[in-house]
Image (cartoon, rainbow, N blue to C red; front, side):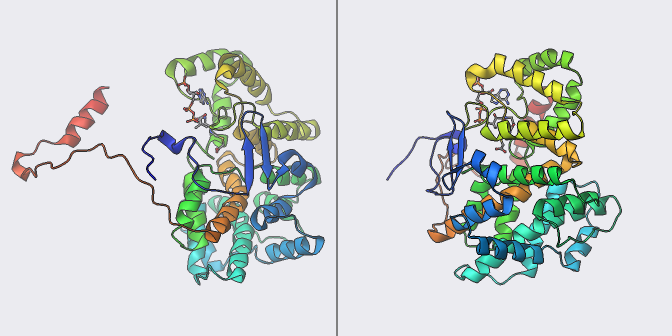
Length: 392
Ligand code: CMC
């Protein structure tokens, strides 16, 4: 088979066959294993949904209880991981800390038995259990405090908020955070999932797979956008400044964070649910000062860019929810990673089921048969490109 058309960003090119999730970008539909995201947000929990994504069907009561029990049991970190984290600079980004720790887990659980279902199950449990503990531990350690131990009597979401804030969360806050995790758990072949699949296809260990996905999620065009949305709302500062801000972005051709999606051409269904969750939180704990700016920006962007299918994506309202839950801005993307670990693991497992190493081709655009110029006769191509950069 020959396929020669080059599509930047592989837009529209199927990279795999998958039965994990389905997106209809024109009609704003997202389903996990055939179940709509709205149904799951209403009735399920993050761990039940993770089970559904990874093992392909909803668990029985007994299966779910066992899965939850295993995850509770594996939440703690080895003291040597915590010692390693003590050496991290407190000014480092928590996504870098998370990526390093995810990879380091592979040092401690190094047996690689990808054809053994028990190994697969253990890796799934360990990663889902420990990633939140790593994120919370880094947050406390960078403030100069010891991390606090997970609490076995708390559910997954409540325990994370407890480890982060050192306070047992309000039940509504914990339930809303759990739904946020569920909403971010999976989203077909996005950049980080693709990265996980490429890494998985080499048959490396699952900790390396998750570390590579975390590195990919960190960028501002992907998971990093939720953090940038809050910085943008901060910069806009008032409802009156929304129009001038938008105008200046459009003139500079710069992207408005939290808007637009490669697949959705309508408002992201997750953004609709997240906005509703934000309003529930505001009702109980007070309105966020940035919410009116966000609403005005949504209206202005829809008026100006709606014809291109540019509407709020998942990252637009998630930051407002996380702020209300007391999560610091630079932890928004690590929180996304906690959730997306479920989807990455589901794709890792699916990839192993029918593996072929990823090895795409390229269209070569460089020189051929170029002469080797001796050192004393060379002009610096680097200096010229630097000069162009400085003067442009
Ligand atoms: N603000 C202004 N214009 C936009 C935006 C935006 N946020 N997004 C797309 N456009 C315009 C873009 O300028 C282009 O216009 P034209 O055709 O006139 O040149 C058109 O829409 C298509 O844009 P694109 O960049 O070719 O679209 P893409 O599919 O490559 O990019 C995207 C998708 C998500 C990277 C992009 O919309 C973007 O950069 N958004 C801002 C960052 C963001 O919120 N990222 C989170 C994505 S959702 C969660 C996730 O995947 O992590």
